[in-house]
Image (cartoon, rainbow, N blue to C red; front, side, top):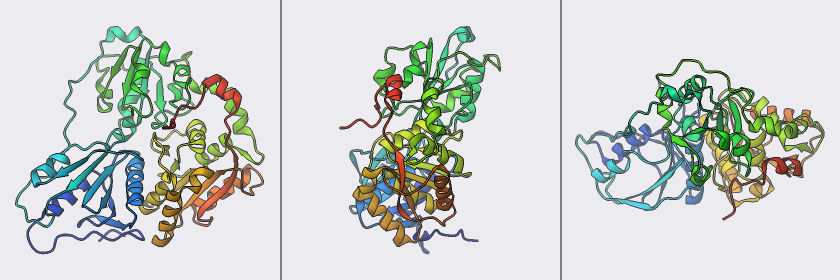
Length: 450
């Protein structure tokens, strides 16, 4: 039985009777890379969302790749533009030099191991070849294995204070089990970047908190107090390499985490008494979580997102004031359930909401008044209406008529079950970061202005 095609998406068409073509090879490889559909122009053999504006097509591809699959594991989004140009991405706002592909052999090589499956990244290919050219038995390219020696840490290091600094690559490679095995054997807490929220339960003793948002939160999480820092899956846009340059660091590919401590005892002590961003910020966040009046505190609104989100759901937020609070105050314990990109791209939240709708995935999208006014946000919401999808983006800011916290919970329920409003939905939320929070964790450093 053929699978149901979402509204607004054209079903893929296979090759007609006749020889296999370059385009068939391209479509087969894109499917291997997790591409579910193309935005912009069609590629035979893949679902297709027609998008006239190339900037909107790129935005949707970026959001598609960054959201990944329901479990958070990585895939690439694809925009096909006039040229023809193939934009493959999982990094909102990401750019790459245009690479000209002039032969089948060059196409196979270019798609063998494109960036973006693990750590968010982008590539752009100018397809300067005849896609209708018949081909014989050209094998599909295969993503190369990580060609690095397997690391093993000697058990003599068991007495060290070890900290794991984990980024989105751990989520996107679905390496959670390996990370858990490592931390339990070493008694090491995990300090996650804001692209890797949910790797540990928010209240676990192994959760050192979320870093990369404010100037001092990595230090509050114990980064500078550790004898050894294991870095894994980091996005340099979240944690600049210079931040760990003076520390004793061992970088480990996410898929190797499970064997790193192969010869260690199976169970280490819980990392009690270790520094934690969560513990340092709790006295300042707790009153904000507990406040019930309107306008809502941003921390309380973020708490509601976590409580309302169903299985397979995702919270997507534009970088900026709203994205800060979503990343800082959403107590998620599910990797991939919170998505705030490392770079600012106007319209991301709306694009993520539309991609989720195409996937049949629940989504709560959040932006601020500046993001709501962005041309890209309006263009995506207009496209969603044309495609027949009820897409909503909460606009956290000074407007809206919600009476209290309970009214926000009711609004979220209506948005998730399809009864609520579509488009930009104002929600009265206080976005300013309190001075007390700035005093303890420093100024916001995520998404620096260019």
